[in-house]
Image (tube, rainbow, N blue to C red):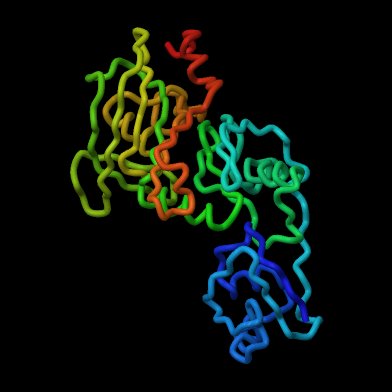
Length: 314
């Protein structure tokens, strides 16, 4: 028999998913059987697999100890860098200013040092997240390409992650970018419309002015902040969100981003002048993160802006 008190970090999860994440020797078939037989209870009462757990709930499993082995977790994240530029933090989220060159998640080449690993190490060293006592792992609610910098949101608990995920999916979270493009824009501000498709094998997108089979409509809004004679500094808002939308859409109208070797003029270069520098939250009153409704956050110390002011984009 084993009893576990649900922490705030684990609240909001289904009973079956919490159990599967916590115990590595308990077969799913046995788990469902024991729930039906009332040998797995929440607060000493019968539960269902889909029941949502809340902070302080006591989950009790009246099972043999051999199937109640708690998963061992390895702390590879402790080898990650401690370099985090934190814009904002509360009990539920972190807003991070990701620098160009840093991966959001591990890949085959850079498994150890990435943004999510740095977040795990930071919260672990603060004592705010204890892997051995929590089935929830801190996670990023959005991602930015390695060669793009800007604001990334990290969730400290499952309720925050769900609220953020829903908000981003429903396009209620505004993400605004800075970019530097070749040439002078035709207007001081404009809402651009086109049609987008992606070649999955080549990982490249195509833009057309016609609504063709297999395309999806995209809308990109820009505002000119400055023009230095050969380059335009823009603020860009995505009114739809597609892969490489800003890069491909602006290139389509003849104003590719500086440093963009995929859609622009500098073949072989992949340090596109693009930065996700501002975020504005919109949450309903009954949302877990309602206290952030209407809040606006901006990144500081943006290298793209410094380079522009120094005349590096000409």
